[in-house]
Length: 208
Image 1 (cartoon, helix red, strand yellow):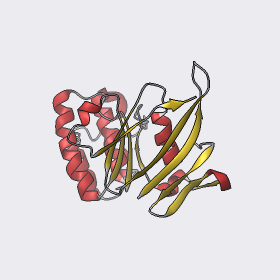
Image 2 (cartoon, one colour):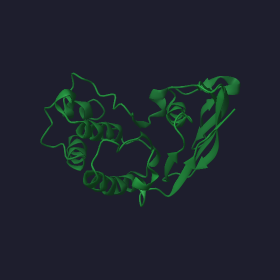
Image 3 (cartoon, one colour):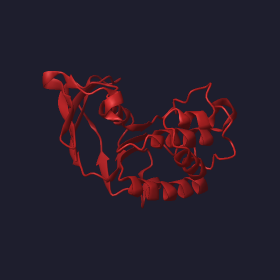
Image 4 (cartoon, helix red, strand yellow):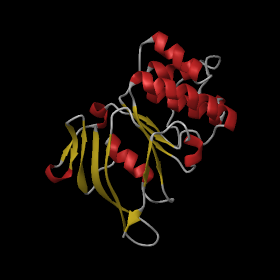
C-alpha cells in the first residue's frame, strides 16, 4: 500500500498555487495521472521519488515512512529504489543502449529480454545521439525497469511513439508489470492512450 498525503507550493504565472494530494494506492495498481498544464503532475512524481521535498506531508510505502515533513524525515532517492521515466529521458550521452541497462543490472538474460520488448536489440551499440526520439524514449523506459523496481513512475512515457509502436509496447509492458507485481503511476496528457492498461486514475488540480 502506498499512502500519499502531501502539500507542495507551486510557482505559477497567476500567483501562488498549491499541489495537494491525499490518496492511497494498492500494490500492483496502475494509475494514470492527468490534469491541466502546471497543476504539478511532474512535481508529484519527483516528490514520490525523493527529488523534491514538499512543505507538508507524509509518504508511506508498505508501512515504511519515505517522507514525514513534520519531523524532517526523508528516505534518500537511492533507498526508495523507484524506477523513473523522465519526460526528457535523462539518458547518458556517452553510454550505449546496452550500457544504460548494464549500469542498472548485471542480469544479461533480463537485459536481453528488455531490449527485445523495446525493439532495441539491433541498436545495442548506439549512443543516444544516434537514436530517434521514440527509440530514446523506449530506452528510458527499459532503463527504469532494469532494476526491477516495485514502484515505477512514468512522466509522459509514450509521447514520442507512433500509434502502432505505442500499442505494441503497452501490451508487452502490461504483462511485465503484472509479472513484477509493479505499482505504476503514469502522467499523461492523453488519458485515452492508456485505455486497457490502467485500473485507476488521479485527476490533479491546484488550489490557491
